[in-house]
Image (cartoon, rainbow, N blue to C red):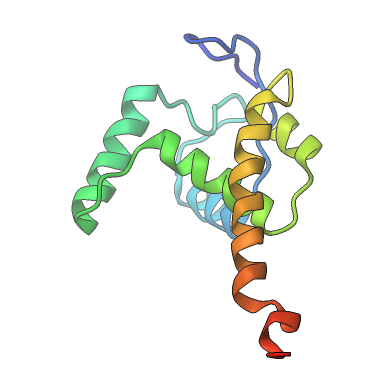
Length: 125
């Protein structure tokens, strides 16, 4: 784990990967010819990531921003039943204040879904 070199966060954090990402990493590692045990898997600077996202977005004619991807992950994590305390650790937040902001968005989704599909309201009594 390498620490962030700039910004508010100066400590490293663990990044978890799903099954598809693991498969893709294994494919990537298998494609590298000259590798040693000391190689860093992804030695990527923030500007490099921004360029990759910009190029991917240009292919799809969509503006892609790293923070929007993070925001989308958070909302989907909560919509899929993720725990707010786990989310706080994943995001690296020291308090629940910012997580609470995302939780309010996800709760309004739940409220709107209930209004739309409430069985009692659909009975027409």
